[in-house]
Length: 411
Image (spheres, rainbow, N blue to C red):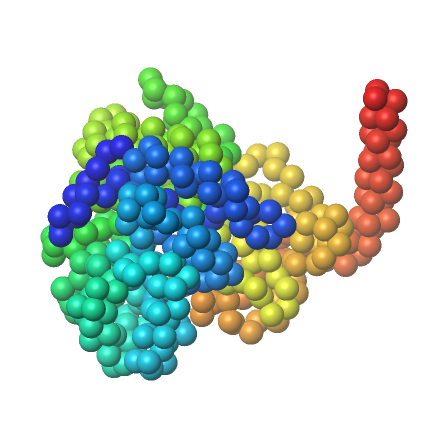
């Protein structure tokens, strides 16, 4: 595995394993699959594992604590985050750190970050004594490196960088986000100030992986070397010399294998000029087609009235990004409750705004959901749901019964 040095002398794998999107089964972490993937990654050189207090409804840290013991704990650097939105006192910080140490079954968290801060959130924590808390915890040996993860604009980022002698920062960065949030300017600013930079969302929540708009794929096809969309996106981030480690949330073993291969093959400044031009062209296509700049992180859910906000935005984007997309039908079936039997569509939104406060991308989610409802539902949506249930369910059940009968005859 390609290793890159931090500013304090640690050697981190160029690829880190993000535990926010572990494989699931029945809504919970699929422990056997997740364990297999994480062990494979570590056995092949990945030595940075990132998690946080709320990931997988609070079970991510406990899961990692259970599997990262003995030899496997010695091989990795663990990173987790202080849940800043729950902190209202100095004692709260101490309490959450102790809980996290216990859940992770470790005496020391190698990299401890303030989670998802912007300018206002940091000012609040400063007044509560967060710097004193972090320095005290470091002196006590409970944490190794002090840092923050960031979701705000570049001006706020620079203010936070200037506020303390940080060891590390975690920023969202990919070829669509060069000017969003901290962006390229923030990346270079942090590196110039001696801060180790770790990158999250290299695939922008999966938007840059999987299916690619036809126009964008034609551009990738110009290259002499054919790659998957995920490989293209990951290489772009790894190409930056200011980036020490790129965290990827990998839900399948094949994704782990591919990302390790890409990380090993992509040292800094290794992408030729002609390929960099392809990135610019592809970026223009995505910017033209993408309607909502959502990464699907899930911070906005659960919604009090049951709206599946990430899926609403995902299907809304699919409608405009892919020709011949069946996004409207999937929306009716999955979110209208025709096939899922549970309504979770945008039209249910009551405008409470809780989601917008939680959104790291600072999206005005209630307003966007109105757009989704207008474009994906239209008039008479409840009638469409009733019609869908009366027509689709009988057909579906009939096909299921026929397949079952054929299967029995074959056996």
